[in-house]
Every structure is written in C-alpha cells, then in structure tokens.
Image (cartoon, rainbow, N blue to C red):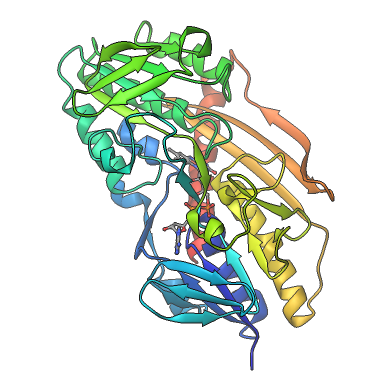
Length: 393
Ligand code: FAD
C-alpha cells in the first residue's frame, strides 16, 4: 500500500505541503487534505480590499486543481481529534483517517479572555478580521457606515501574532478609505507593544498621507489595561471609557486548537525541529506556519509556504527515500501604506538544532522615492500571484 499523508488545514502551509508532496512523489504517496472551507480567502491583500485596492472575490481560491491535477483527496470537514498511538485523525463528520505522517497547519485561534469583554460571540459587533472572508467584509461595511467624523478603534495584539505588520497596514488602508469618504474621521490604535514592525516607515507614511488622523496609545498610556464593551461600543483604556463607532479587536493568539487536541503544544504554540518542521513531541507530526514555534521567522503566509516545502521534502524523504537537502527558508512581508506606496521587510533563514535562525535581512528605508515605493508595491502583486499558484496549482 502507498504511504499515507494527512494534511490538516488548506491554507498557506497546508495547501503548499499537500501540493508539493503529491506533485513531487508522482503518486507514490497518498495525500489527503482536510479543510472545512470550499474557498480559502487569503488574509494577504485583505487589507487592500479594506482600502479599495482589491475585490473580495479576488482573495478567494478553491481546491479543484489540487484534486483534479494532483490527485489529492480533498475532504471538506473539521479535524476534531488526533490519536497519536493509532496514528489516526478523526473528523467532525465521523470519519477516521489513518496516516503515516500527519501535517498540521491550522493557523491561529484566539487566547480566551485576552481582551476582557470580548469573546468570539462578540465578533459580529467588534470583528477581528484576522481570518479573512466574512469578517473582512463586515469590517469594511462597518467602516463605510461610520458617521461623519466618527472613530475607528483598533485593539492591537501582543507578540507573537500572525503578520507583524498586518494591523498597521490595516490602519493605513482604513485611513486611505476614510480620507476619501470621511476625512474628519479619526483612528485610535490601542497597542500593548512598545514598538511594532516597520514602525518608522508606517509613522512616516501616516504623517505624509493621513496627517492628524491616526493616534496610537502605547503601554505607557494604559494600553496594556484595555477592556471592551460590545453592547455600548466602548473601549476602556486604563478604566477610562471611550465611545467608538467601529472597534477592530485583534486578540492575543495561539496555535489552532487541533494542535492542543493532538497534545503537541508547549504553552500557546507547537514547538518544531527546524530541519524538518517535525513536532518536538511527536516525530510523525509536522507543524507548519502560524501554529509552530520555530524561532526567528515571523508568522506569515510567505513563511508558512517556505516551511511547507521543507516539510514536504522531509516527508518524501522519510516515506519514499527521496533525497533531502539542507533546509533553507525565506520571507518577505510587504505592506501598502497608500496608493503605490509599498514597503517591505524580509530575511533568509537556515535551520539550526535550536531554531530557524535569521541569516540576512533587508528592510525598506524612510525617505525612499516614489518610483521605488511603486516598484515595491508591484513586487508584492507578483508575490501574491506566485504564492496562490504555488498553493493551489
Ligand atoms: P492559514 O493560512 O490560516 O490556514 C489554516 C487553515 O486551516 C484554514 O483554512 C482553516 O480553515 C484550516 N483549519 C483550522 N483548523 C482546522 C481543523 N481543525 N480541521 C481542518 N482545517 C482546519 N502573510 C504574508 O506572507 N504576507 C502578507 O501580506 C500578509 N498579510 C496579512 C494580512 C492580514 C490582515 C492578516 C490577518 C494576515 C496576513 N498574513 C500575511 C499572514 C498569513 O495570512 C498567515 O500567516 C498564513 O496564512 C499562515 O498560514 P497557515 O497555514 O499557518 O494558516
């Protein structure tokens, strides 16, 4: 019988891993991909949709080619349990899938109680929009419905979280939309972190494009003591209530719950061996992307895709004896600040026994000219088209 690989999560890490294992093993490995959604909405470029630069439909991708072209068994269901002794995954629909290797790339879930007053039952009033699709559409509709001169608040997450520049690109895109439609509106960021990704670049851009519109309250002014009241649309900062019109709550994060259920987490995340992305707790399980604790790489789609290729090579090596090369990883995070004003930060990485370690990095500079910023934005469009093709075929 062919060796069996089950992949849980059809996102940046999981879809890539499934496709590479199926493609490169040419049928020698039986690959099953478990994913509840029939359409995956990328979080990448979801902020651009908020800013009016993309249509929501352009973020949606289906699994048809993975099934028809690569022979992957795509199962639309939730994984609800892992029996590590028996090496099986159980699904909400009742099926049990046996595996020789299991790949978990479930993304994030939110830490319970991270923002007092908020839980998942409040997401229709105070959306997180940190998993893309209906949440993103809701947030955009709320911004569009803001009264003239209204207040958009964001409760930013503590480290580590999915997409370090994501909240700040979002603020830029919301500001871009408000500047055109509601120029006296204000944006308030309540941020528990001292500093954030590409801060100098964002602050320069906000000053230039959205003067006087954006206020950020950091930990020195009470942002570590924040509470929300969805029923009255209030944010309490150090006990002082502020009435707002939109409140985007991005809570603290942890590995997708299936990692906990599989018993492979240590704290909030699932530690992995950098050379192969194998769980440090169970060598038959590989963990990719946001859910993994791997070292220096940011939690990004680019990172998850890069890690997936390393894991795919390791899995094929283990199951079919194919050659395995030393692990190399890379990442770039692009952000759009305003029309044609793109910035980026990135690095290459290698595997050490201890962690995925950064080798060499680069970052956009303040004061760059418009032509370079436009080129950086265009690069990001090329990257988007490339990664979705790499994931979905
Ligand atoms: P995901 O891509 O989220 O995939 C997880 C999948 O697992 C989901 O489809 C989910 O339905 C499924 N799943 C979860 N639990 C189960 C279960 N029990 N059973 C079955 N399926 C399950 N990254 C970039 O590289 N560039 C960017 O520009 C960028 N911009 C971003 C902007 C925003 C606003 C946000 C929020 C994120 C952004 N990211 C960006 C980050 C990127 O989206 C994530 O880091 C990346 O998607 C992580 O990949 P993953 O495979 O870990 O998880």
